[in-house]
Length: 154
Length: 228
Image 1: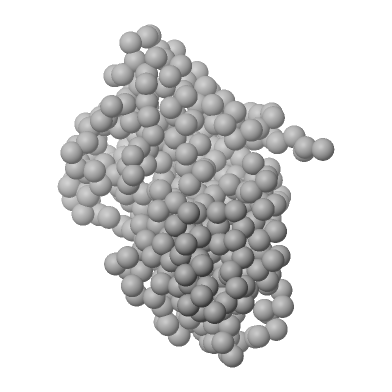
Image 2: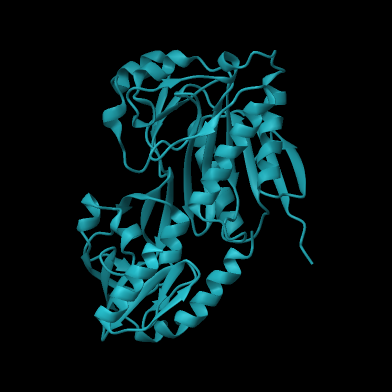
């Protein structure tokens, strides 16, 4: 319930359309990887985080392992990890490039990933090395469908 | 048509921690490449203390030298969770399974690991419960009987659960177990009023409990298997 209220408030703030699928929010204008990370591209720069579906399936995040600045990341490869409920889960980069900024707020407040996965819970910013790679990512509609199919498996 | 789910169980006996870790890494890599099906390692460790990714070594109350004198090892790992002790008479399950294939997230998987132990305990009349917030694990009252620490990489799990059948609980005095200062540790032997069968039988029941909760259709047993 709170997610829906938040979602519509952010939607009007950002003037973007929000598509609610059941309880997890998916934002249009972002691209998605099948390992549940999102990327917001602005020119040759990208912001990366994990989706609402991901944070819901993880549980309360207690720790985020951030990459070092300047690290090279590769699409589909692990760049860090999050810990929740005694489980560390690797997070994979949806894009290739160089890490230029990380969200230091997550050191003190890892819960931002749960409460604000698309906004305050962003994880890293990357200088893209290959914009073509974005074509292999899903748009919001495909990602929503993907989540539904995954959830139907159990 | 639903494809039958198979779980391959390797019963390893007592295994050194690092050797078990290397085996898990190999199996996880093979599982990711779809060379093997879901696999479960069932084993015990010699006295070993381990830390999780956050390296909370402030919860180790003795020096590493003192640990060596006791005959215990210390290892840093990539799993979630805080500091814990593993040793003889503690049943360990390390499922190396594809959570991604069944669409299971960390939270649901950990809940199933908790239930695996809770269901087993109830077989012996012990009423266990899952941990409250920030206390993941399995409890009997305010005493901890089972611990969990998991790693998920590319959707494949490693590490897993540790269930106290009858370990020497004194070893827990040298740590703040799981970072929880005012909590006791307990075991099935302490809590059960019924007479217990052999550890081997209890371990088999624990595996069966896990297999049932994760909806496996059949189990293939491999004893003292080695990585090929």
